[in-house]
Amino acid sequence: MQNKHQKANKALVNHERIHLRQQLELLIIPFYLLYILNYLVNLIRFRNHYLAYFNIRFEREAYANENDLGYLSRRKLFSWFRYHSQMT
Image (cartoon, rainbow, N blue to C red):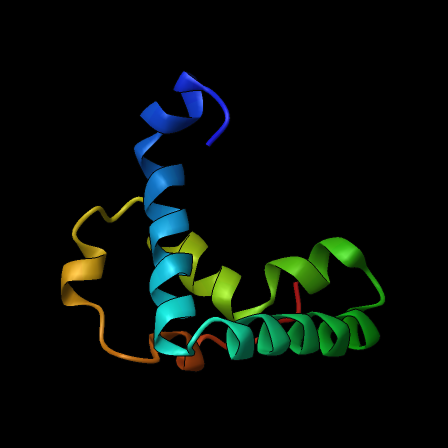
């Protein structure tokens, strides 16, 4: 995090911790490969960067739970898998 404001933003820190957990369970490199693949498939599907990004499964899980500071203590392995793209 680049500044004190970002470090103090508990939701942002939790969002990034969710991504860290996702990366660790996929052994890092597969996480990035799946992330990029999911983005590209979404980009073809939605033809819009914004919708493609926000419909990445990993982002959907992180955004859906970033305000729940206890989420990581209850989170099951590969929880990101159940977050499907939505037409919005």
